[in-house]
Amino acid sequence: MSENLAWDHTMINVLDLDEQIRRFADLGITFARGGSHRVWGTENALGYFGLNYIELISVQDERTASAFPRDGAAAVFDAARDFNEGIERINTIAIRTHDIEATHLRLKNAGIPVGDVVDGRRVDQQGNEIRWSIFFIDNTISGLPYPFFLEWPGTDEQREEQLSAQGLITAHPAGDLRVKRVIFEVPDVAGTARVWSLLTGQPESAQSAEDDTDGGVVIHLHDRDLVFRNGTANHITALEFTGAKESLRGQSLVIGDSVLDFL
Image 1 (cartoon, one colour):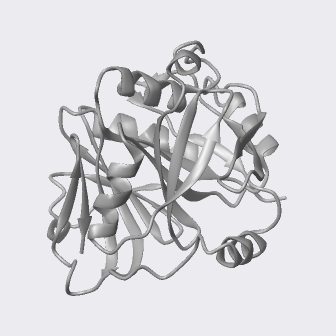
Image 2 (cartoon, one colour; image 1 turned 90 degrees about the vertical axis):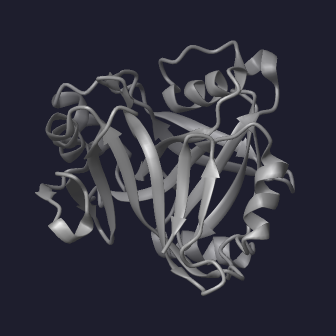
């Protein structure tokens, strides 16, 4: 089976799920509570833009969220740490694979410090258990968090049909929104992009001058772009959306040190 990698979702660390759900709703963007990750003491809310979605993650049980190590659940650990420090920001992205064992083996053989493949689960608001397979990468790329990788049961078409039937993939009042680009600001553009090229299996290319990327590098992942620009943040700093109606077009939503731009 082909890995067929795709940008699955973006994790954003927040302090108050309900407050952020209201902020998005005020812009005409629909989020719904997803449920809880009991093993990590976290909870989330989800906003879908086709199969690609945003996961707002926060801490539900502070004791549990403070009791697990970073190894084996790096992105969730980082979310809990940010919560404890009062920080809100974009965390990292998740990459969907259709053969998680093949992806895991490929990266392990390439020297990437992958954690074990484990079964993930959370309980949704109706009490249903949602399951997936997942692995995290324990280290960082010179301080920049790695992505994590997951595999959902069934095909993309089956998953989209199921999520639509559940009312999770739905029309947003603000338009036919799609996440188009993620912006990384990193001190070492070439070196960081080289690692992400290995992770995604996609080549790097220089951005054109009209994109105003200040010497940036882009990796195309299907119809979405990962853009690496020179900067000191060493983190994801922005998401860019297309498809906004006139009422939203040109606006931005700031969450901590991160910004969501609606083009």
